[in-house]
Image (cartoon, rainbow, N blue to C red; front, side, top):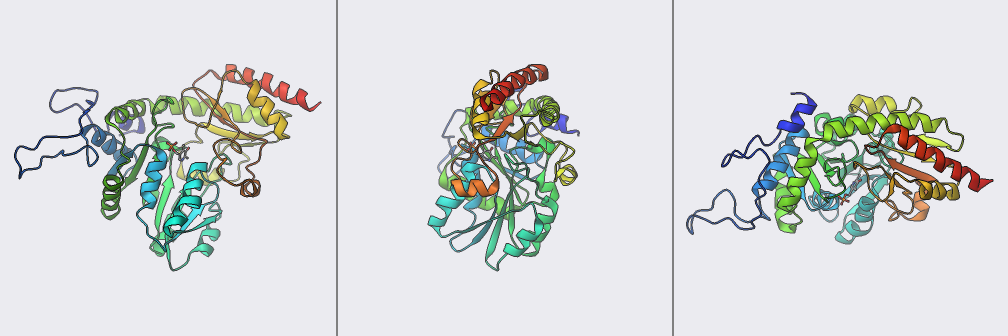
Length: 384
Ligand SMILES: *Cc1c(COP(=O)(O)O)cnc(C)c1O
């Protein structure tokens, strides 16, 4: 089956009981037992719910895994993946990750005795050099955002396997439509389904997928123990979003490519970060493991004031800390999505205040281009 067909026909065809084509929303916490000794397939919604099961099977199939798990947010999904490990375990984490993930691993995990170390995973030698006998996990995000650094998923997975290290990849930016880390040897994929999978900025959700039974058992236990599960109606919203992922992603990516090329030629723009651009250092590697550059790009203006003026002058993109939605979204990562990263670390990473992130929506290219043109003009005048 092709990728587009899979989005429509994974996980669920029609409801067995009624023939309903849209997965029924089982808005029930409890499922009655026939008698005191017999437990049916469904018991209590924290442990399992039929609507959630459809979403979990769907994402497992799309990612090329076997077991899917739905959570109340991307952060809850990421937390569940880390709770597989224990006090004393050494955890390697990519340097350039989502701000909320940074906050979780940097400020919360050490309280439970995790030894967290950040590495620039875009060079496989850095991972190699950081591995210790007690290293248990490697957490990756590629392309990273907003700086779009690329990590070699195959090489990282191979290296980790030699050392019995579990690999986790955040695939939010690409979605299984463009990149399937499990097929490249990664053990666990996590998602903020809030972004492209849901696609409409109306539902907070997270997903975990693995193909390994041992890991799936752990995650199922953690999901039921912590209880941060996705509600049945929200599962339905994500299922609905997934059905249109192909047309949204294709269109948004097409516009993103045009905007990235055009922005690269604008005098006010110092640098554009987008793996689809010919000069991008990780371009070849990226296209060896993904089937497109996606719909998010970032660019650097000459200074902080210009970046602020540009963002405040745009009419079409909403100013918000998110991505992957039908509407374009613009942000200043340093003070918004990545504000949880300390200033000094941000400066080292190049996550500075003149860096603007744009998640390209479904508006027409010409309209976004015209809007950016007038906003760049305002930014330029602010400098004179
Ligand atoms: C948004 C995001 C998250 C967190 O997801 P929530 O649904 O907001 O909890 C994690 N990783 C990436 C890459 C994200 O963009």
